Length: 195
Length: 210
Ligand SMILES: [Zn+2]
Image (cartoon, rainbow over all chains, first blue to last red; front, side, top):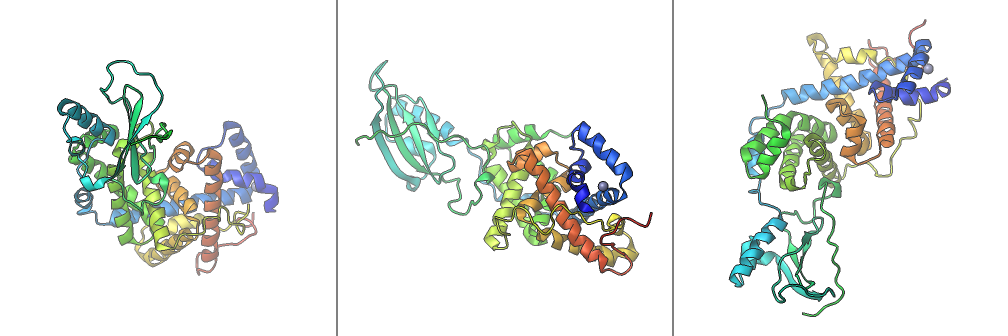
């Protein structure tokens, strides 16, 4: 008996959610008019949904949320602008002072810096004043624990270094999708280089 | 008038913790309810819900504003729950996309009474509590992704479009997962009700005698 209702039965769930196309809905309702057993199935589906809703809403309503928000806030790190923005600032400061204070300006612990600096000729012809690197692009790979930062100069050189991202829990982050909407990976790829 | 989500997100992003606190208060019950459905234990659900908010704050810069805040929040919530279940080792096998035992066959059990039995009525409170426990047990038998989609649909009333976006799956998958999740819970509840005196769950054989 259930076989005869196969298509219909599959549609009941979507019908319940109001997600059937108008045509499918009309057809289904016509079937329901003449079929008590499908009406029963629909009622049962609806009952399960309502039961779930009541069950969990009642429990959430009864739960004690005192201290909940405070608990969350206490676990927050002070919010910092993204690494890219911090780099922009740090780099312009570095250009001004030409001292070694770049890392400090980034607000990164010295220990967080894993590897520094590969200089790569990327084969682009120089325009403008040579020897004055300026920040043209910064990209970080947000998904990796150790993030490469690519800094392109006007001469076409690229400086790449790796930053151990302090905001990122190292191993246990689990499902990648819990960090949605990540930036794309950096596009500059090393073509070999010298230190 | 309450400040809208995106305004609060913008403020939180610029370092305003109070704004983030308002977002937490706005969604804590809902996030907790979903977490409870996922991990079952109340204490753990509270922890998971807090953890989800902490993650939301940590990744505020990744929120692009092209989806609504709440779909993003629930995405992080369900993923956090799934992580916890996996860490705990109680995650159901990943390969179980559909449970064959359910097939296309929706039980015709008389579950219409189920809803009213869950209503708050002192005389019924024992039964109500037991039904609640059975529901949680039934939920726990679903693959975690089916559990997540069912909870988001039933508790949050999310549209298929929003579900597809939140869970990053095609709309067709939303539809079939929801169907299978419901069919399985319904079957498990029907089996249970059939054994409860006074509720007379009917297995097969149609509704009533008309
Ligand atoms: Zn039918």
